[in-house]
Image (cartoon, rainbow over all chains, first blue to last red; front, side, top):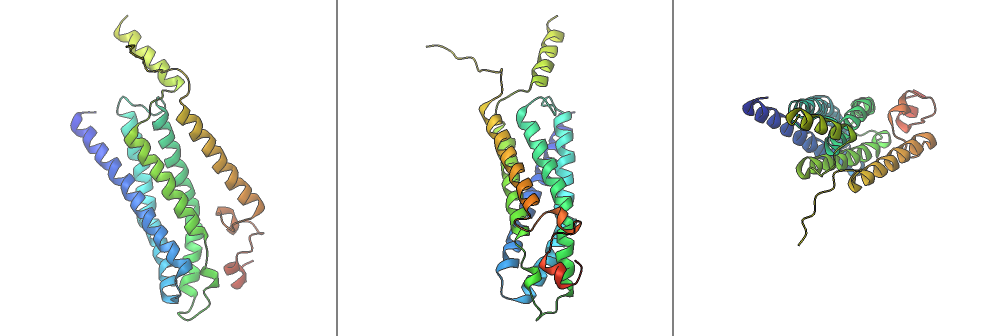
Amino acid sequence: MTPRLRQLALTAHVTSSVGWLGAVASSLVLAVAGITSQDPQTVRAVYLTMELIGWYVLIPFSLASFLTGLVQSLGTTWGLFQHYWVLAKLLINLFAAVVLLLYMQTLGFLASVAAETTPSGDLRGLRDPSPVLHGGAALLLLLVATALAVYKPRGITRYGRRKQHERRTVLAP
Amino acid sequence: MTHETPKTDGTPRWVKVFVIAALVLVGLVVILLVTGTGNHGPGRHTSGGGGHPALLKYGLQ
């Protein structure tokens, strides 16, 4: 990649990853409000909003983060499987995105219950702690991924060592 | 004064900690899913044994 293209790819990756982190933090706040608020209107609005954020912010950002991460690693000397921190970030991103996609089923269900609950109706069906649990876990995972990206801890995989050896052999035959 | 060359062979300690933490996390999730504790997870709407209060309320289970 040319330096300009590399900067563009890095900007896209940082934007999507940090955007995902921010959206998860917002969803976590909403999820906490969903189980603590005494106002039925607020509780219903929480689950309807969380589904929208899920489909239109969390999923697009998670996929963008994954794809731009692939471009970043494969388009630079870091590689995808050569450094442990890149591999760890890839696994975190993949795991979080898959769990999010599966969890949209639950968010959709909660949103449909919220839509059918009358403003003064019974909120017991909506007092679900699982969005808080999932949001908290996702936030923790994404913070770890961000820390890995910033600190880039040392450690080369066996495959990375082999590639390094091959490069050295090519440079100094 | 000796100049220490960074060790490049072997698996770094942080990777071992990361793998152990990941295994603990996955084990915890599997236990929660198997025992049904916590009443969460993607399988609760597809399996018959979830018993989610909202599903019961709407007669869906």
